[in-house]
Each structure stands twice: as C-alpha cells, then as structure tokens.
Image (cartoon, rainbow, N blue to C red; front, top):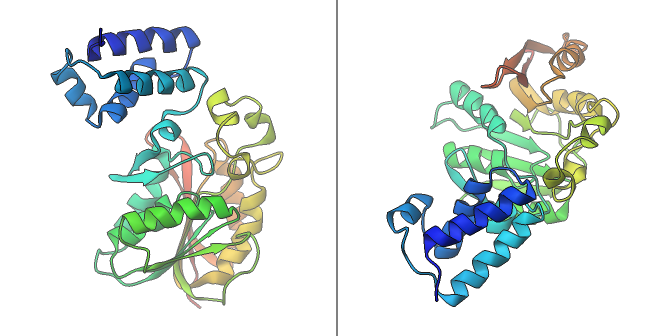
Length: 288
C-alpha cells in the first residue's frame, strides 16, 4: 500500500527526532516538498495524497542522508538568499540570513539605476556578486574565490539569474594584490572568520559537510581580515565603500584593525544583525 503525505511526514519526523538533527519537522517537509516538486504549503493542502513507490524510495533515501547530518540545502541542492534561489553543494558554504545585511546596506547607498564596479572577495556560491548584479542592472563586478569548485557553482548561479555577462569570476587568493589601484567603487566580502577553537565546537552538520577552507581563519579568526584590508584600500576608488561580515564576538577587534588605516579610511562603523550582535563592518576610502 502506498503511504500518504501525512504518514511519510510523521515517520520522517520520528526518525529525525531520534537522530537529534536540527529542525526535524522542517527538514521532513522541505525534503518531501522537493521530492513531490511542490511547496511545503501544498503538502498540507493535500495531506492524504498517496506517494508512488518511486517517490517513497526517493524520500526515504533523503531522510536517511538527513539522519546522518547532511544539511537540507545540500540534499535539495539550493537555498534562498535575498529572495533568489541559489544552487549550493559541498564545495560552498550554505548561505546564512545574516549575510543579507550586506546587500541591504548596498541598497541604502546605491540607486537601482546606478552604474558602478564592485568586487566580491571569497564569493563562494556567488550570493553577494550575483545578487548585487541582479539588483543593479548597470553594475559590473568581479567575484574572487580560491576554490575552482566553488567558482563553478557561482558561475552556474550567475547564469541562472541572467547576470553572467556582467560578473567576471577569478580563481585566486583574495588576500593578494590582484587588481589595478582604484578601480572599484564597492568591495564586499564574507571572508572566513571562525576561530580554530570555535571550529572544534560547531555542529557536525557544519564540521562534517561544509568546506573548512571557507570557514576558519587562524587562532583568532581574523587572519583573512587583517591581510585583506590593505588590499581593499588599494583596490577602492576614492569615496569607494567596503563592507564585510565577521564573527559576532569580533566587533571590537575588527574596528581596531580598520582604525589602523584611519589616514586612508573614514566613516568606519560596525552594524549589528537582527539578533543584536556585531556582524558587518563598513568603511569608506577617503577622498584626497
């Protein structure tokens, strides 16, 4: 006998609760909606729908992988960011809602019709570069990442959202000098900032599945930030903006790093996220 949507969900939730994974009910609903190619809302509108044998096998296979801790975003192959769907996989970090604050700040500074040149350092799946190019159709950008596999994901996302002709992807270490001086109006980054100690305490879902290269940055988590700030100052045009994300305990240290360059940077500030934690730093290159 074929199981119903209700039965499948109830069974999956019990399995995932017993395994101790995060958000077992949400996980079960997202996975089943993915298999049935519908929304989570649709599941509950048709709770007595019968699954085919093929659908049942597919769903149970995903639940088993989820039981082992594999993140839902990797299982379904996508995650929403700023209203857009992005492909994700083990080569890239799963987008977090905190990173959306960078885009919000950019939207507060630039008008939709503005033409400007930006760089996204450590682009990963391309969420910042692609979203900025999507929101600002006259903007052009460069997205840098050390991982060729991550850049393949980012390129696919740029194609998906119709901005591939305005974003150039570069495989390189963004802490090195890569560009001519003064060519960018905006530089954004979500660099690695997890400390070695914090990495030892993160959940298995993160530690066992997401790429460590994109997460950690030495003993205090600030290695990439220290190295990239002078590079960004060189890259920025006069009056250009720099925004980057950092760990919620690092606000004071990040502001101290930026103020070492107060002869070249101005309007240095730290913005809090919706949880009230320090999260995004901003600075502007001084106009000589």
